[in-house]
Length: 356
Image 1 (cartoon, rainbow, N blue to C red):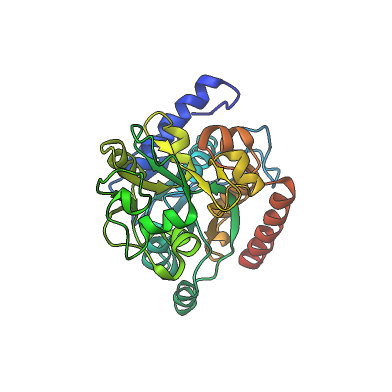
Image 2 (cartoon, rainbow, N blue to C red):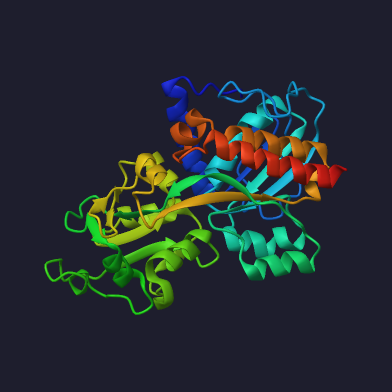
């Protein structure tokens, strides 16, 4: 199961695999064995070892360990559907070199992961597409769960329309808000007079999702989010809904569109300086505003006291600069070397706290 990100065919295979995993919403890895869980919610066996073994970018991991079979145990990971494909790709490579470590990753949404699993001590990591919220911090504190925040990558939250929609390929932030705010437009012509007198069909993230939270905060603000839409944590459900209706619209993380570019059409967003299409380049430069955003994972400090968890966390951070994996396979903007160094320092301090 060792992977080579240098081969084009390998990258294509990995993308298709990640797209399928994102749709399934759960991944369990035990050595080189992959299975799809129903929801991966309890993740009691899922751990993705971490020996700092050599990554697909030729790195040997920050800890310099040689990637042996000595690590064993389980790691449970829940949270963001947006971070899910990145965490899954890293875990797949790590598990290939650490057959005695099992990994369970489930897509519960950022908020669902924090409130139902991580902050009550049920998981070792929580992935998030926005920072932890005050009420989640309080819940973690009430349950004695300490954690550290690690930056994973940069995403371009992507608004998508049906491929047959040739009128709404560009939108202003205000028009996007009109479509998704609590008092939402009912017809496309309510947004622009020249658009069709057809009902808008909406597919988007559930309110347990960090993508939902980020979209509300940065597009609709105090106007809130409409209830008149099909809410889901599964990106493939959003994509299928938009693909199946000429007058549909949806939104999710860039990675899913990146892996399914023929299925649906991305909308160029005009934040006042002209329409900008979502891409790795525009997300990295900040030009794709206001929908470029950092992605995170939060390891539990108590869990970092276990060597296999600590080593996996090191391996994850070591892979955040891996362009072949993060950008080529998954579809996010990799971290800079400076950011990676900062994150590794934060992580090492947390590991020292846990194991000291």
